[in-house]
Image (cartoon, rainbow, N blue to C red; front, top):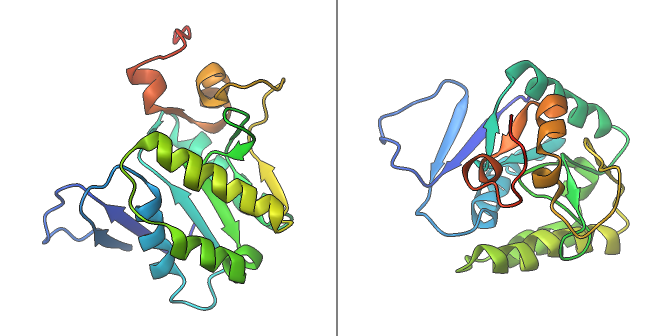
Length: 193
């Protein structure tokens, strides 16, 4: 689906491991995903012709490979009409695209404001601090800079909730994955059958 894959890993992948077609960047473990995203985006933007960059972190569990691949294809197709495509958005803590799976188009990738945003990313000590500063901060920057945004999954109602939890079954059926937190902790007691 994508021409190149860059894996930014904090795991103990053996230095000898080579995955065909994948560039591996090894980093020490830091609480937040965004510093890994920063490393990946810098690497991807070394090629000035980069048209799209997709972030996907390890907080999802693949349930249906065909549906998931179709979801990535839909993101790319939507990316022809929108500057940024997220898998989901949330109203929890204010509207934001959820950063676990998001595609940036060339207009955003080449913008000065996005480069400033990427440069501002620094390691943080807590997941909540990361969400508030970088995930919600990114969405605020998208709005401030008039980026057009779409999502693959839209909830049927508003509400100050995390729809990747509440609509986990629908997301799994439509997009082919579930969030690890839902399967591991089930914070809202969703029927997972």
